Structure formats: C-alpha cells, structure tokens
Length: 230
Image 1: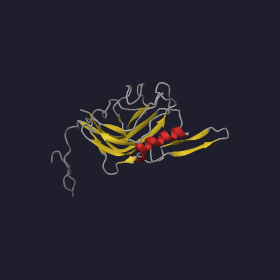
Image 2: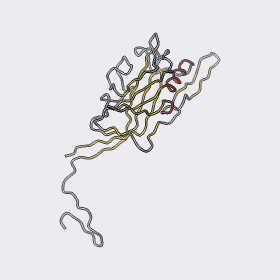
Image 3: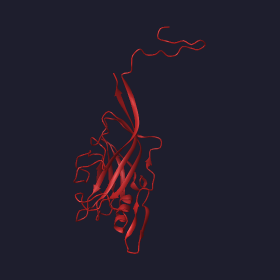
Image 4: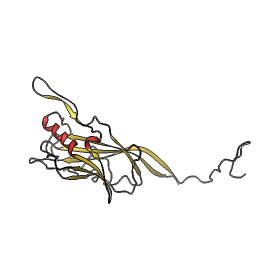
C-alpha cells in the first residue's frame, strides 16, 4: 500500500505525510514583571482610595511612579500592556514583592535600603494590609487577592535586633509566603491581548511618608509561540 507500512499480524499504521511541517510550537516557562514606585518626596504621598496600573510602562520608558526610565530591575516588558507579540501566555502564579529605596525621590535613591526600623516596617505592613491586586482587561476587572496573601507575601517576616550601640541589624520583608497560585485554571493571555494589573488601596491606607516604596508584581507562566520553518 503506497504511503503506509504494514506489519505482519498488526493493522495498518497511520500514513506518513509527504510534506514537511510548516511550523513548530515552542513551549517554555517565563516570568513577566512590572514595578510601581510610590514617591513621597518632602511632603508625603497619599495613597488611600487610589489605584495604580502596572504592566503599562515598558523597559526604557518613564512611568508607574518613576521619574527615571524603567530598567531591567523594574520590568522585562518590551511593549506596555501586552505579552510579547505572537506568544500565548498562561499565568499559573503571581508574586508580589515590597521593597524600599534609600531616599524619598527616585532621583537620588537606590535599592540598598533595609526595612529594619519602625517607620520602614510600618510602611511595609501598610502596603500589605491595605493593598489589593486586580486583573484589568479591556472591559473587565477581576480582583485577585489582598497583597497579604500574594507571595512573596504572607506577612512581615524576619528579625530585627539592636547591638550595644543602638544600631539595627537584620531586616523585615514580605518574602515568607508562597506565591498565589491558580491551582486548576491558569489565566490565559493570548498574544494579541491587552492587560494590566491594578494596585488598589482602601480608605484606611496610610500615606507614604518615609523613603520611596516599590511594589513589584511578577507573573509566572507558560508561553507558546509558533516557529516558522517553511
């Protein structure tokens, strides 16, 4: 039989196509992340009853509370509000990191600050207790969970001690909790979709009055794209 192979004692196997495939699918795991900065400046910053939109400012541009262009520390997005062109991305987990800079403006601060004193720890707990993350699609918003439950969250974690001179050592952080998982049904983001994540605060959120506070949200997921070979 032309186009088929027959083995004695067995039925015919499916025919082998005469053409090479035109494309292949490539799968992998990748993170997509974005950061919001809260700059108090000299007069403080009120965040109660406010919302901020992440995943809208791509690498090399200014936005999301920053006055300097976002670098690879803040985001790996090439295009704001979209997954990479042609890539379908399924999100199975979300992480949220809260960290502080060493100054009250983006112009002079760096990420070397430790959360080891009362003012800094209060800012950390304020964000954890007041903040909520929500998906924002074109015409639909879906609440995810309070930041307290979204890893690297789960509560302030760590130890702070004082030496004889009164200087603090150690650091509190929100890295103890596991990431928030979509255990059965990942969130599907088609390659052509537009999305963002809202960082929202309730009415009892205290203002930011110390150093700048950054909230970095990381999406953990699978991607699939098409490789043209013909």
